Amino acid sequence: MKSNIGVIGLSVMGMNLALNMADNGYKVSIFNRTSSVVDKVMKEHGNDKLIPTYNLRDFVNSLEKPRRVFLMVKSGAPVDMLIEQLLDLLDEKDIIIDGGNSYFKDTIRRRNYLKEKNIYFLGVGISGGEEGARFGPAIMPGGDKEAYSYVSEIFEKISAKAYGEPCCKYISKDGAGHYVKMVHNGIEYADMQLIAESYTLLKKIAGFTNEDLYKIFEKWNNTELESYLIEITGNIFKVKEENRYLLDMIVDKASQKGTGKWTNLEAIDLGVDISVITAALNGRFMSNLKDERIKAEKIIEAGVNEVADSGIKKEEFAELVKNALYVSKIVSYAQGFKLLSVAQKEYGWTLNFSEIAKIFRGGCIIRAKFLNDISDAFKNEESIDNLMFTKFFANEINTRLADFRKLVSIAVQNGVAVSAMTSALEYIDTYRTAQSGANLIQAQRDYFGAHTFERVDKEGSYHFDWIAKEEN
Ligand code: 6PG
Image (cartoon, rainbow, N blue to C red):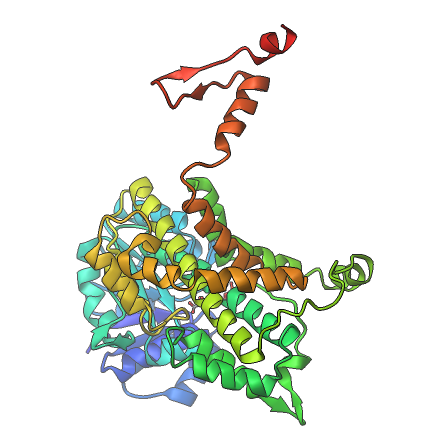
């Protein structure tokens, strides 16, 4: 009997996805460029559902038709190389699925290239790390809908489930799936940065210990902040190694594989403000200037006479931080979905935000209870300009904004950097300002460059001869 699907690339994610498929009753052929990896997987996890293969021809011939070839290899050139090697072996209507963190424009190119050869190509975002891949990731499939129909049963079966639904729904054509995964990662960066800023505030201003922080985050995980990242952060605070907190032994330099950078480059390309996600990316850059920061701390003073006594109790301060974190999270998801709303017009996709929010409810790194509220908000107010303006989230923001402002003021007065939180607050204030100072920018541009401006009292574009006026 031929295999139902085949997985190429048995790294942590690839291997665990193959095991997940086998657990769900599918016959899975496996292949890895380094054959010893195949042997290792069979030795440690072998069962009658896993079919080891040691060359691509045998791998392809072991698959039932239309063949489903699942690539879990490093993004970039390795994907293109593998496609070329597979081309001679596949038949028309076979399906190549790229489950790596590929750049969406590469996915569009590959889909169009393979379309000419009548071979399907699906770009599939997969989120949830090792545990997600093994027991249930969030899956964001993009590509030809007909191709997806051949894999939907497998994907929905192996995906995480949330509220009885698979965290896997068809996104839209060509690169849409990888695009949504890219935006997921941008929001992930923002989420992680906001939590890091909350940790810094609670530790540096309120003096909470790691033990206190574990209890605070454990409590927060039973509130509107309930989420995977809040849960694991609470767990991180309590881990000790030889009677020292492991967290305190970790160097504060954050690495990145690049997906958050893509999100920012794309937002700039499309002219979308994703300031909280940008602040998170900058936070990672700045964290790597560790030596410079050690020097700078001795050169540039905090500028506060003493730790500004906010005059509030520790527990009240923690509540301010919680509200600031929650509102900032709302803003970061709102910015991510705003980018998606502009992208779908740019790339000709049809995105269902309520359904996408449902995918994020389980399996993925940004899974959070309030994604139900996001899904409902988009379902009830489909044509809304921004998630923040939906009835539910406008109320969530309005009832916490005073606390948010107070918290940011205390942070600023104490010289504690909260760039992602302040970006979120500035985004709210910028959006809620009907009359901005941009009329002065238009006047300046027209003054030195005659770039013209629109008027409030009449239609059209105008130039004023500011210099002649100045000379008179
Ligand atoms: C996921 C994660 C994953 C990502 C890692 C590392 O959804 O499972 O987003 O895809 O690669 O989190 O990302 P960075 O190295 O960019 O932080």
